[in-house]
Picture 1: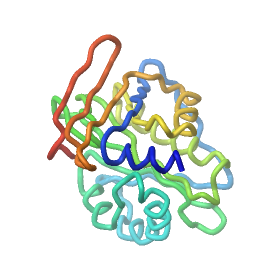
Picture 2: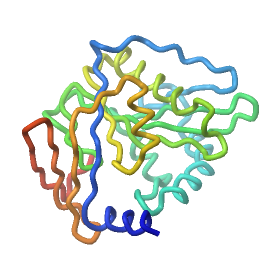
Picture 3: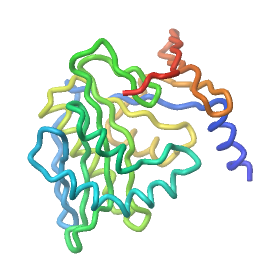
Picture 4: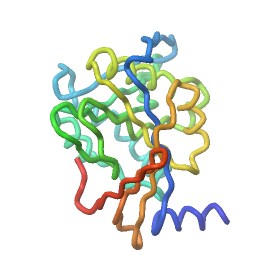
Length: 222
């Protein structure tokens, strides 16, 4: 009951999050190998059938939306199409090697050209990337799929795309994700506080060491 009340308060008024960072000069390439699964990359410039991807993702998206409905906006086919049309956004997926069903995904956003771009109420600096919307089907958890997605996206962004830093934002209440990112070489870079008025995000406060920056967030989204 207390956790439900806390979720409602976070959704409506105030939420604490942690900003993690992974740096290119401290990262070594990881082997992405598990005979049980196949990892694939999709973005606007790769010669892959995104229509089939969207169709194949449909059942997993429904599970994602059911699981996340109290905390995140729904991920729709229209949203996926919108993301994949952008030249700075992509997704890595994991398929079950035996039955070819998609069991997990991880999205990323790259900023190469602007002083900063916004996603999820976070100002992403130039030369950096943000990974977000990680999800593994509940029946396939505790099998190393999230770790495969972490390795695949990190290799791609830090080595192939030559990004300087990769950020990930984790809610303070998400203990499993906090632990998983700490184990995968991510370091805490900042604290992030979202100030809301009955669910409407008004401000994002980023506290880094002794300094804090306050940004208004209305209308800011990539």
